[in-house]
Each structure stands twice: as structure tokens, then as C-alpha cells.
Image 1 (cartoon, rainbow, N blue to C red):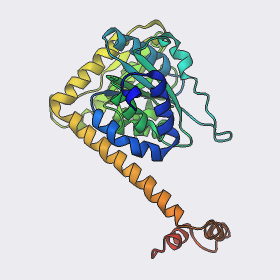
Image 2 (cartoon, one colour; image 1 turned 45 degrees about the vertical axis):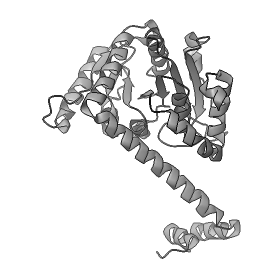
Image 3 (cartoon, one colour; image 1 turned 135 degrees about the vertical axis):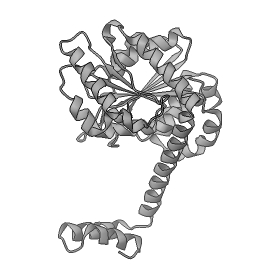
Image 4 (cartoon, rainbow, N blue to C red; image 1 turned 180 degrees about the vertical axis):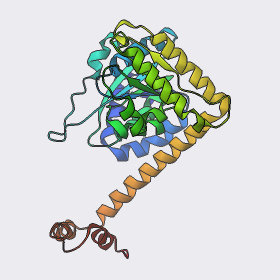
Length: 312
């Protein structure tokens, strides 16, 4: 632990591996890590696959480094439903950051967890925060409506779109635009980029009454970037800084931190209840009820209540 907090990168990697693979170890370490954290700005980057999220994160990290910030990156990749493995290839697009001691990149597999985030993401963020990284960037897998989970984990949420994908309306249906603090149209050198920007701005304006009559309410800017060339990335970094200022001035940052704490507490409580409940159930009893449910002799709710010894 001491080596991690003193900046030892190998110890940092080992500690994240420990909390990722061993929840009981994470619970033991959380007290010290939690007390030392709370200073990092957490930026979530989400959007459909193919929009260039990893390339944009790469360029944003370089911008943050020019400002003197130490940056931790958690790139979440989907796990295969067949092999259980994950490519963990986002760092291939972030090779420009290799050798920079002020940047730490960690790839994590979702391991079947819904919502675009690995279950251990919160613990990994806590480790990086306690280790003194001023910026922590979480890149989600890009899984559609499940991406809404990032809104409960990050201070600032970037939703990345790209022209030609035709998913602006789908994004609105999924509620993704509603979680965006900043909208980025990447690959803006492609045909149709201006149309995508206009569509997104119209949707932002359409949703603005939800903020009420407050003139100081944050309205998500729609920015154009060409991340492979670094074009427009400085504007995105500036918008992130402006949003951080807004969070503190308006008190919204305190509200978000409270909601994040409540969500994390509920997640841990749910996992502990499930784990301890399963420990009290015999494998034979569970298998018997599974067979009865499959044979339609009993419904799933009744079976679950029977396992818990609770009335239906």
C-alpha cells in the first residue's frame, strides 16, 4: 500500500489487480484508500463503438499532461460471452502515452457486467485517486442504453458521436444525450459532420426546458474534433475545465458525489446480500428448484422466496 501511494507503478498495477480479482481484499483496503481520496476529477467518455473514443482519450490525456496533471485511464473492454476473455486493446490506440510516468493506463474487462463498466471500476478509480492522479478518465465499452451507468460514476460525462452512423435519434431514445455534459462529434472531417452537429444541438435545445428557468444551468456544448489529428481537442479539454468550475459554483458537484456514494453503497450491499444469501443455500436445493422452474412446476418468484424462506 505504501509503495502505491508513493508512486510505485508496479505496486499500483498489482493493487488494482488485487481489488479487481479479490473483492474481499478490496473491502479491507477501502478504508485507507477512501480516506486519502476525493481529489481527482473523474471524466467519463462514452459513445457507440467506432466513434473514436480511444483516440480522443489519447489526445485528451496529452492535453491534460501539458497542463501538468497526472492522468489515470481506465479503459473498459467487453468480455466475450463465449470465452470470457477480452481483447483489452484500447491501449493500442494510446501508444503515444507510453513512457510517460505521469500517465497510468489500465484496461479492464467487463466480465459480463452490464452498463459498460467493469464491476471493479469504482475500486480502481479509488486506487488512482489515492495515488495522487488529478484526472481519472473512464472509457466505457460503448453498449447503448447501458452506458447510462457512467453518469453515476463520473463528474463530467463526454458522449462521443461520429457522422454517418445515423444514431443520433437512437442516442436520444436510449437517454444517452441526457447524461451528456459535453457532446463531441469526432471524425468531423467526414461528410455529414455539420448535419450531425445541427441534429445534436437541436436535441440539446429541445431538452433545455428540463433544466427549468435557471439561466446558470449547464447546457451541453456540441464540439467538433478530428482526434487522429488533434484538431478540436483543446476545446474539449477547456469545456471539461469549465464544467468542473460549474460543478463547484452551483453545488452540483456535491450532489453528484452524494449520488455516487449512494449508488456505490447500494451496489456493495446488493452484492453482499447475494453472496451471503447464496452461502446459506445448498447446491442440491438450488438445482432442484431450477429443474422445477424449467419444468414449469413452480414460478421463479416462488422459487426465490422458497430459497430465502420468505412468503410470496
